[in-house]
Length: 357
Image (cartoon, rainbow, N blue to C red; front, side):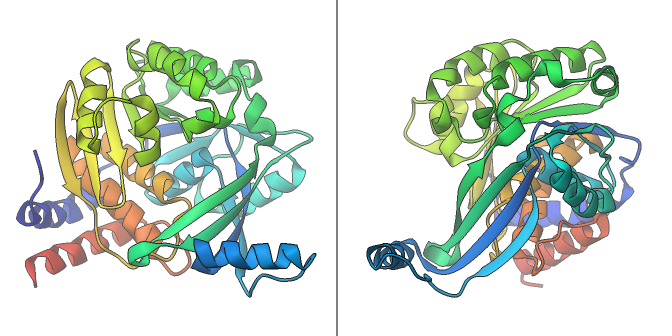
């Protein structure tokens, strides 16, 4: 099933009203285990030109590549997702570990946005990333991340306190992110989701880049996708190719993967998103906006999807909401996430554009 332009316009108009009416303030979402301090470097050139200049500077034994824009932001899939959820009015809780400097930045960048930080642990080391944002085709931007995972790599179930366990059991939805950089990622997700299911909470999993540990993919599939512990699997183009080797087209990969999975498979790409359930696939186009950044787009998309889950929206409605939250973020001058009023306005504008109004 593919959503047409006319159908998308009607959905935008309908959802612009619904996002303001739903009550999600009493909902609790818990996300773990990563909080990064991200150093963004926006490079105003193509990858080929950047590589040429880096090589030139290297061969001359040092120097400057070119003027670039630098800025610091909160990072990590879990941290970015709860930041976006907090802006949408959801009770958002982060479970992670960082160092003293990282926690000070978390207080500045997350607590002020409404994220609950009382479950963030302060240790001797933090997680840090340098994110290079390069120009690509069709005005798109591609991010290349160079990370020191720090405590993310060692965050296992034993790190959770009694208070953390209680919070997970009380949550309406629990997310585990960045499995790829966590040495105990499969075990952490499995045990955390078991806790969530005790109280019938929903579970959400976004693995990150599986190429970092390809031999673990099958183990994660068996422990999570076919066990009944997972409700929603969120993937991008790269990730779905690791989780489903069969099929040439993305829609076929989602169909095949969802046939055997006991969870919904949600694939987000630059131009379309696909929802797979028991072998049936729905396709929803994304919104065309001016892209000012790429890092964090998937986290914003996850936040919109989770907001839709909590609000009780249908799966196609959720994809529209997720696309809207991501499009708002990547096109915003300052990289801010939308409030519900911002989201409603964005959807109204898209409805007008799609109908030529």
